[in-house]
Image (cartoon, rainbow, N blue to C red; front, side, top):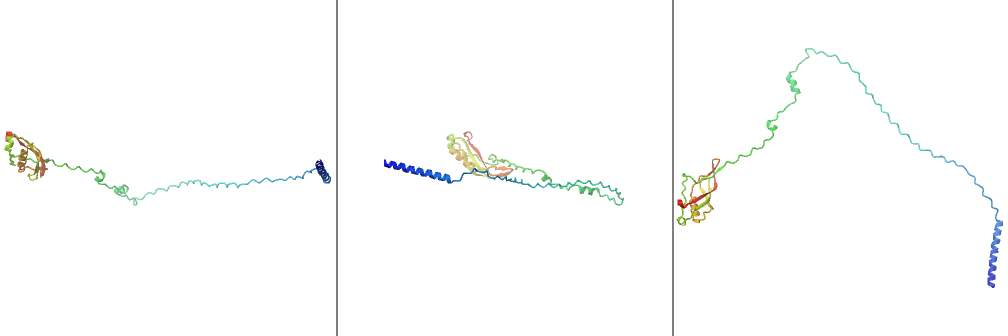
Length: 219
């Protein structure tokens, strides 16, 4: 109880002190004056002067000169030449001085180059031959055994004839089927004479093939 009473007493004392302090301050403060309006001055702000741009220079006027028309001059009176001053040049000189020089070009240059003529074809060849009584070529000997066995046929021989008509090389191109007949034909033809081949009338070496026949009816 005593503690609560002392607490209330202390609070009352503190409140009374605050009230007294407030009263003393209210009496000591001067009376408040109402606010007075501040004096106002009107300040005129000058407007900024507009920027003045210099006017562009006026284009220079070029004076166009008017064409002057020359006054026609009076034509001089024609002077009649005296008979002594007149000289007539030959007509041939006047023509040659005015006519352009003409150079004649050869006919070969004016015409197109003609293509070269094709070479002449070679003369035909006349082949050699072994036929002819003047050559005196004997017939091949018919082998007796071939006659008994009835062997017959044609032997094809390939003969290289020289320009002087001799048989340089003889070989069998086609066999008769019988070796005896083939050997008899080779032996006989190696000794034959030939009329050589010619080209354009000139004798040339030539190789040709011909047949040697073995016929039992002619044996």
